Each structure stands twice: as structure tokens, then as C-alpha cells.
Length: 571
Image (cartoon, rainbow, N blue to C red):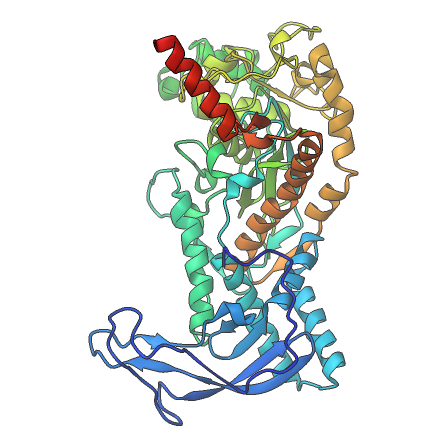
């Protein structure tokens, strides 16, 4: 489908055939002859709906089968250039209707609502009425067919990368949609019963989603997925923004972890300085445990047993490791979606959450990125930073030492700072930074911060919240207004629409498509602005960091002249 010009297909046919079959006489797999069966045979004619903007009728779809017993491949009508898409020989739908569904989705509409509206429109145009059973059957066929059409559409997901930030945004902003969910009515998520790796195979996951949808269309009677291994659910990144290792630690979430008395920041500092080591907790004396508890602000009684003292420390550790939960545990649906965007609102990565959101989800998304952004803006900054310190201490020690993602030492009063590496610098391409280095290609620094917009207030439980405030850094002042405006933007309102899906594959494919379409719309505007300023002989390009730029095209005459000059110098 890569040759079909997107959104420009117009079906001008006024008459349609009543009979559709593959034009092939030989098998496309093994070149054996094809057999065309009679009524009620596997390779026989079938009744099939023909659906266009102004036509709704039953036609005949003929199947052919390969006579090679080692092959037996079925051949159906698949000529996309007629303007029709075949959905399992049950429905032939015109491409303009599929593009119409996509355009509705681009506006944030529920795909099922878009499909229903289109079917109603066709019935009005044709003055035909479907029975309730026919309406349900056609709606399901059209919905499944649409997602198969999208899976067969060739896309380069790197096309959605911001043309200004490229693959290395300096600032990324966390967003969430707790109402973009998958209902658990028809699907059961399972979890590994044994200790398993947190690494997920992104290509395998998305390939499985696509294959499932295409099989559903090829064989409409096949049963959709009802059991799903939650630990394999992969995030979505444009390929060039994805890290070498992608993780999903949802299986490790402790749903019982509750807020407990104590200062998580103080506990993390004890761990960083190795004054307290979790693996040695049973070897500490009661006096040492009393000291740790006091330093962490955890109340204790002289009558507490050693086990109770240990439990109090472990409970705080468990809470910090999981982080603050934003919402209650959903009973009948998944936990929604988090995603991060650059200041131009282009999506840099998304994660689809089964259990309720907590700090782990943000750490997963950051660790799985090719470049952890110098500044990550999230309303639970303290919780995310402390969770990162516990989950990946080797990495965070390189990025912020003992500062816990703050601008300065969280044990000292908050102070205004200057981070000159965050200033906009002259456009340049410098690929000297090693691919797997913690150093960021734009700032040339390993420093990272986790900040909030002033939404977090310091409390006894989290005294470091003020240290994460974006207003403490003067170089980030210009971003405050930009970030504040995101929630009121048209793009954000489209992404924040509440939608509940009942089909797992449709849910994941919808979210990937929405990330792509809404981001690419922004990138297309960026390209248009550059094209308008191009001089004759200039073209728009992407540089090594995938930022948009302009290059001069050399004419044949110029190349000949350069060649002559080099020849003369050689003489």
C-alpha cells in the first residue's frame, strides 16, 4: 500500500462488478495451477458485501486454491488499484472510506464511532437499511478491515521525529491519559510466575499485534486474543529514538505498596553513601536500626522488635521503589497511557500501562530512550527521581551523583542555579559523543534533572519537592510558558480524548497510530515552513541527529567546473 497516495484517493467509478476473483491462473507461491471450486466448496464463490460511499450491495467473491497438495494456498481478489480492499472475502470496501476513518481518528474520534457513522451515512446515501445483525457484522468487518489496512500501509516511523529537536530534545515533558484504556471484559492479562527479565522485544510485540489483526481479516471466524502476557507489552518509540535495550518493569510493581511515614530522600542518601545496605539489614543491631529510622524520619517505639524495625525500613524502601501512584487501581480496565513530548508537542515515546501508573513507568520510558533528556518535566518529579536512584543507581550516579535529580544537593536549602549547557546553541552537528555514552549529544554533559512546574509542594514525606522546581534554573525560564500552554493546545485535546477499547490489538495499534499522525502533522508544518524559505537549488534534509536543514543541490555544470578545477590543480 506504500504507493497509494494518502488521503488523496477518490473513487470515481459509477458502476461496480458483481463478481470478484484473483486474476492469477497459477499459484503465486509455487506456480502450480489454481482450481476454482463450485458452490459450497472451500474454493467456491462466496457472498460478500460491497461497500462504497454510495453503494451497499451483496456481490460474489470467488476463491481459488492451489492444486499442489504441499501448498494449497488460497487466492482471493486483492487488486488494491481498483480502489477496493478485501476483508476476508466478506467485505470489499472502497479505500476512500478507509481514509475517511483515518481522518476521523486524527481528530481524536473513537474508531468504532467513526465506523458506525460511515455505515449510517452509506445507508442514507443508498436508501438501504441493514438489519441489526447485518449492522453489527458489517461494523466488525469494517473495523477489523481498517486496522489490517493500517498494518499493511508502509510507514517510516522516523518521519514523526521533530524537525527542530531531532532525536535529542533537551527538554521532554511527561503527559498522561488515564481515560485511554483497554476494558478487561474480554481479555485476561497474565503475569510471569517466575523471575524473568524486564527487557521486552519491541519489534516482536508490534509484529504480533499486526499479524493478529491481519489474520483476523484473512480468517474472520478466528477468535481474537483473550489471554495476554502483560510482561511483553512494549512501549512505542520512533526507531531512531529507541534505546538499545527497552524495558517494562510492570511485573515488579507492588500493588500493595502504600504511603508510609518517612523521608524517602534521606533513605536514598543512606543507600548512596553505603551507610545502609539493604542486603545487610538483618545483620544490623537494634541501635543501628534506630539510627537509620531516625535519620529517615520514621517513627519507632522502644518496645518495637528488631523485625518491626526492619519492616519499617523495608516498607519505606518498597514505597520509594514503586513511587507515588497517581490514580486508584482500575478494576475493569487498564491503567491508561503515559507519553513524553518535546516542547513542540511531538511524541518521543509512549508506554501503555496495565496496572495503575507509578514512578516505575516513567523510569522505564526514560531508560528505554536512546538519549535520556537533560531535563524531564513530570508532576511527580521527586518520586520519579528517587525511583530511578533505587532501580538504576549505576546510571543515576553518573547523571546527578547524590543530587537525586535536583538542581542542587537536596540536603541543603534549594538555590537558584545556572545551567549554561541548556542554552540554545548554534546549529551544529557533532557526532563525537560515543553512542552509548551518558553524555548528551547536544549539551555535551552527563548532567540530567527531573523537574516539575511547581505542582509539587514540599511535605514531611517529600521535603525535596522544592529542589525540583523548574523556576530554580534561569535557562529553563523560556520553557515554562511553552509547557504550560501544552494542555490547552488542540493537539493535546485530541490526544486526551477518553476512549475505552474492547479489542487488545486495536487498542495498541490505535495508540501507535495516534502518536504517529498527531506528531507527523506537526513535523509536516515544520517542513512547509522551511520549504517556503528555500532558495532555488536548495532542498530540505535531515542531519545526523535527524533535525531538519537545507542543503544546496549541485547542478551538473557546477560539478563539471569543480572537476576541471581539480584537474588543473593536479596539472
